[in-house]
Image 1: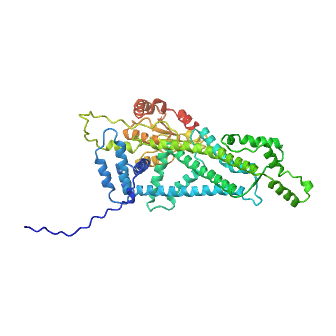
Image 2: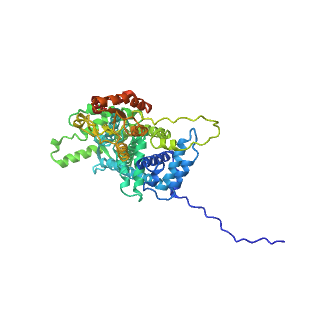
Length: 545
């Protein structure tokens, strides 16, 4: 018999701890990382090819290149899988170059700063209410108190509604703008050591939310949330003060008659009364007015007047005090809290809809090149699929951007062409803003100049971008592709075909004009977006939005 071998006891393996970068991501965060990787790869340029983000100085590990290569060689589904492939590729790259860590750090800072703003909103509401109910004589001017508590919230809500109606898009609001300003400057202080990754994720968030419409609704939702906390704190502080202390209520007026004041009080309480709040009757209003309208001439001294006022306040019944308390609480609840709550709910539903419908636009520069360069292997279920000719890149549709300025950019113009043209060089008043002004850039020729111009347009997208091209040259594939890329960073793109005035040059331009028009039409620029005269270019640049 062979004795069984006795093996030394091996302790069970210790389960590896989950790294912070392996936190499950929501779909919003996955799209956010994909946008960050796309922008970094575009900024890196075409020198490094696909996946050059690993070579931009942002990487913290050595496995970025292998991950990128693995995803470039991975089987890409023919239908319906492009977005999932892009998201997985971006997540893998972001784990290596520090973008994922920067995203999680940004999320923690955002929650911290939002929490601080919430605490500030609660303290503001409490202090505002206690400021009206903290008087030593415990005499509360009901109209002045109510207007003081609901005035700012109601005015802020009206301004938000009016600005949204006038501009055609939802407003942000001061509290939300404050939070957005803090988070926009978050990479400049605190955080990790990978500053480039932090800046990249912040820019990607701004680009993605602006393009999808999430930005305004997101910031608006934060604004309404903070205002709700302010009003709720006012209500709680008012209820605590009225529940724990005894107050008397007065009305003061110089020019209004008692019956007029009674009409205002009861008219204001018409909506609260429908929800069961008690409304002071005419006798209560008259008594509150009489408490402060003591005949000072018969009193003679200030002390006598104060004593007369104190006696009038002490004569108020419990029913009168409860009626005025109900009038105050009902007015704040109906006219300040409930309207803000309804707008907050609408913003929350709209924000949820936009986040649920968030998807990658695979036609954007960066995504399109990746999908075009990725090999499409054989896929089960597709037998002898006919090869398809890839379509040329398409220019973006006309869309709204935040800026209202215009830019004239020269693209590979001949040395004999005057740049900028005399008329366009002397009519640049108001450049960079509204009022019919426009910017004229230098002629873009080299790859570096194209890369620099693209980065400037991506950072400050103009409402109108006019590309001036030499009509004597034939359009090449690189020029057309660059036009399609920059069109995503301008509200509207048009092309101006420029040629000298000599007969020989005019004839050469006329021979190639139809080639230009056909090539531009192939990428989505119809004849209405192609110009051939300086006057037409000038008129389009100075037009108002």
